[in-house]
Length: 207
Image (cartoon, rainbow, N blue to C red; front, side, top):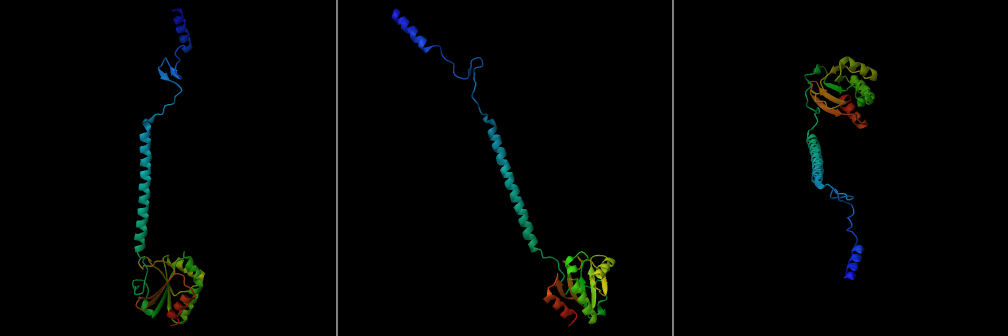
């Protein structure tokens, strides 16, 4: 009996008291040292991310649609531009005075007009020698236009302050060959190359 008791005591000592689990706080009943992730905010964050992506896609699609609409619809609209057959009879010009009238449609702020001033000077001289009247249309006041022409050496017979929108002038410079009824016969647009300049001289002053 004694042997059994001693044996039991030895066994008990070997096992020792029950060890507490690591990180366990006996007073609170919780484990310490373990990080726990709060997963309750995950669905909300995911929803925010999805909503942001959808918003970006919607904005991108809207921008593409607006650009496409403006590009295609604008390309279909033809710019207003004066053409042969247009009547200038409402302008303050006595057209029957000359069987041919060379109209220079210019602007004081047009750099292409300034670059072409030497040609216009020659054009006006040739027309005067052929008894062809030269008229300059400007969107600016007459006095300002006359000062500009004088500085460029272009001495036309008459200067008119005109409404370019009403005349369907799409840009400057523009040259118009007009008959004695105020009807446009030929139109030359923009700064002209040497071949086009010769064509203007041949049809207006030398023909």
